[in-house]
Image (cartoon, rainbow, N blue to C red; front, side):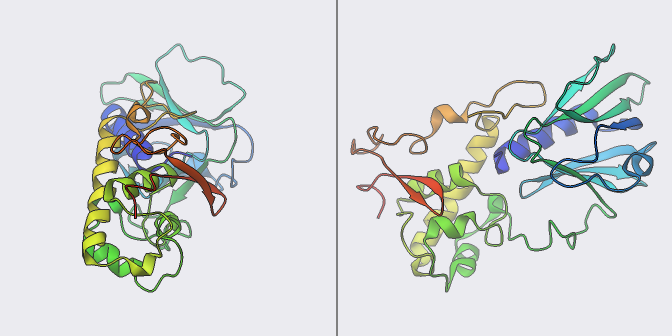
Length: 276
């Protein structure tokens, strides 16, 4: 599933390519994706101008002037495609298409493609609507988290620290890949109880979270399966992963074998020598 860096990359790509464009015709194929399309989805955004694209956690928000914002989630395999005319016929996994018009009148089609149908398209009455059911319980953004802030949200939690990091109420947008990588950068065992993280480790972990996410965004995210940037390019941060997906391989720091095990139904990767 795309995590924060992949969604941020998509949002930045959309912002660079479609800012100022107006939504013309909107076509939807089928009743919805993971969730049904909102009633009158097409009618409520047709004619509106795109004035911003931003991210909240693993969600993207396309802000429209004088209309509800479009809230999207990429799910497991969702992606956006930008296509100039002549527009091709929709493919079997193309679920929504927005025909856009530039300020100079040039047409462009924005298609949402999702083979596995775990993504979603919804509407926000207000682009800043933090009380939307899918946004209201989200924790702080990890790109700017500080040590004291992180320690505060971990305090009192008996779960392993990695499980706590994956809880979107604790940090909004962090997923399995970058939780493993951040813990390695901080030299913290993923099994350590979250509530035992003291000030020093909290500072190290917050720095690890911020740095790994920033590095991944600069690399266009990690393409392990489906992720692609708006122009179709793959991300390349998967080439710089230090522990994730490297079970049994030598640690880049000490040479010890990377250990792989299951936590909460997900694979965890750890250097037992470096991470305590």
